[in-house]
Image (cartoon, rainbow, N blue to C red; front, top):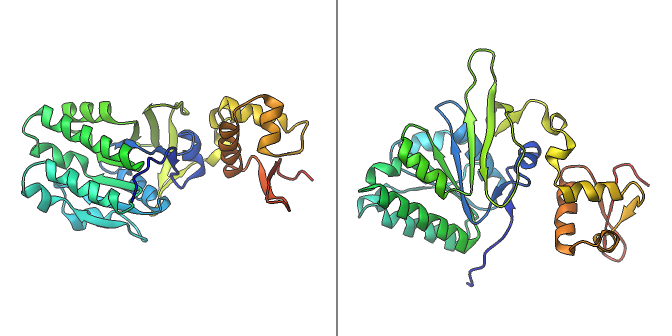
Length: 284
């Protein structure tokens, strides 16, 4: 089967969080989920697994495989225990095992807990090489990668953050303070900054006020805002019509319109000729 890099992002399964990340976690790179015990790292990782077409959790040393699986509610992703491969010769064979999963069509690979691999590295360079090989494999197959990391090992965490395309930090609330999510890095795209309060559920992170809590400019790119403005005069329009009207690139317009429709800002219908027509919700 010919390998093709799939560009774009993998939805988180949550409209609010997709807005924070401008569409989801990036494909072709590693997303690091960092936070203390009880912050919801495993919950968020499973939320991503539920949103993926084919997800696999690579269970790393440091926590029994049954304990990792117990963090994930139904429907559960597939689990692969990395320990046998690691026992056979350091970190290298684990990359071979991850590549085998990618070759079979996995579009999301979660390594949980990522810091469980650190003691097997002979030195910091070993750990850096492993991270580089992982990101190379994710890029080659166009898949999303997620590493669940508890911030107890400062230098390995720093190196993992340097290799990651995105870093999502979860902070556990104390007293009256809620848990909050922050994005500290997102290559190739901006993101909604600040603290985003959330609660934990069996199936994912629940944000306090949903999309309504985030102002429109934070949810939308400049292109998205321009497209919405165009609908004040054009109640119904196609991507091609908006491209000509605004003098923009068609693929970019199509992507922005899809994002607006997914987030409820536009309604999408299919005309008799098969053409997609967009309009403001409630517009005739």
